[in-house]
Length: 147
Image 1 (cartoon, rainbow, N blue to C red):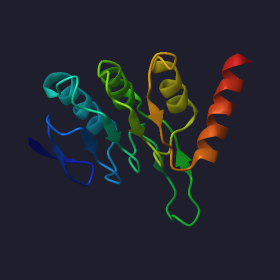
Image 2 (cartoon, rainbow, N blue to C red):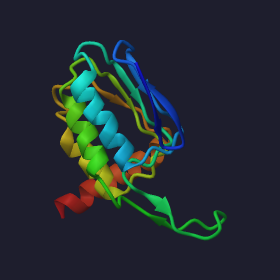
Image 3 (cartoon, rainbow, N blue to C red):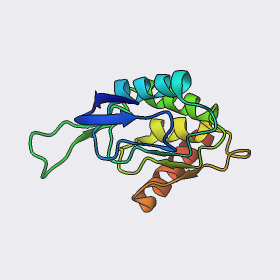
Image 4 (tube, rainbow, N blue to C red):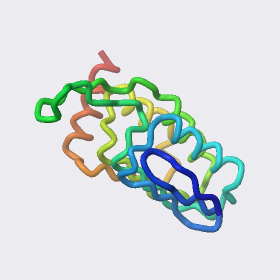
């Protein structure tokens, strides 16, 4: 078991636990990269079934506004952590839940998510918390991608 400061809190990484949970910890791209490297090195492939990373900022998105009443977002400034995480997940056959709601994914992060995983052979269930926004973004990315 390993306890590390990731985002704004201590996160426990336990190779015997069936899940990784860092909900609402404001994990950034570097933190996601570190988790993915830990998963590749120390996680028995059969153990992990769920990854909960909602409320994080793993694609590098951020609010550039001075006042949060009028947000001005800059999306997907660093996809390296998301890409590394998705690569690590593909090597873990029992992961069934990937909770990435409220991560402020822009079009590039959604395209990375949808193109990185083998959706035909996986049993992965992606759970965005705001499904309407997620679907709208996926439709936007696919529309732009096919144009």
